[in-house]
Length: 314
Length: 274
Image (cartoon, rainbow over all chains, first blue to last red; front, top):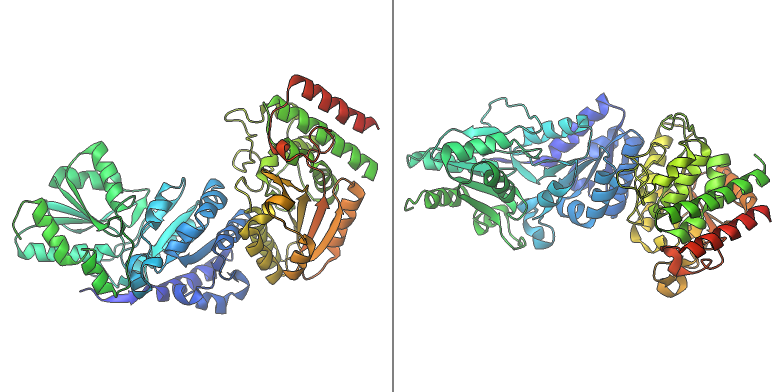
């Protein structure tokens, strides 16, 4: 299994770097600084670090006001809070106003682990993807996360970045891939099938491809860190060149990556799409390994699903 | 500007707003007519604004948190010279810069798009934090309805404004005592409103919301208040100036007949000359 790192360490570091470069960077918290890791920014730039307490709607509104005053606010709270409790504020104060607020959904997806179903976000990507002007990013590893945060500061519009508690250290195996918003990344080459993944799942997809290679099956792995605007051509090429797609996400398949890929293939190149993710269910109280197994997201599950789609007995 | 002149502008805002909403085929008469004096004081006396260069960074910011009173704000902006008054005929016309609820992307001079109630004070809080952090003199004004005070986000924002000592922010509450479904006292009692804000760390003032001098003096007092935000609870009458609308929750939103339009205009004209 991949080696995981705490993403909050990256968040604190990159915020300080951004804060040093740009006096307009603000950080807004809602009593979850310890989860987000923004304390180094507070230590360095106390007058640009705002904590509104347990008040997620105000968190987003204050960030909108800062953006309207010309600043670049990074507002962070847990992914399900920012996409659910403050959904209206994100939709109206941020998106409808087309303000460059950077929304960070921390402890996203099943990396909430034992906090369980009340805290595991299963619809944050779906909600954010629906909102006009919103850029939606689910980085696949720690380095990409930092690059996405830096890139978000330069995007003239609202951005949502999914920030799991844990991410693999490196899913590119040392290749110095630079994150660009909207770009898809091929993690493995092959034409037997395509695995399209996002966020935490991309490291698992890559491992599945290695298992399948041992079986003589060569799958393409396409990592989609940016779900909106999405690299439609890369997705369509997967459909056209492999004929079958498996999507993998630690998120509900409704409205998430599975839906997104299906929307593209339905319009451009209809092929069977098998969706791995959470289906009409909430998360549960369990560690990461248990969750991955329970929701069928392990490399082994992905391998089996590819074989099923290829009508090959496991 | 003299108080008489401000009062005269308020009357112009009220008449033109009434006519404009009627022309648009109906709308939020009650809560638009109740804020004419507040808008007159803010845009013609209290705030620093640059109608010819609406984006001038030195401007003060006004957020109409009760976004449904858009026609009253459009009228104040037009009379202040942001755009020709004739444009008010385009209120609610599809794709015009003057939708029912104000939209900052469509019209220069609108600082925040609002509609769903309860969001404006948070936005104002963020703006005021920004100005304070840069040690700028800009002031922020937020206008909320009293029914809007039911919403939780407004109180989240109230706490944050006090925490960050936003004495560059003034909140005005259009205390017209009606909300959509009836009287505030029946739907959701909010008194003692001033004491609530005081308990949240604010300086609270209560004033006659139809007396331009009283509103001006309250705004001046807010300017002099150091270390905390000020709320001005402006006692107003919903549908002010049109007898069949005054104090009637049903006129939160509606349409007027030809005869009601004539009657309302006659009363408002008489008010102007009286």
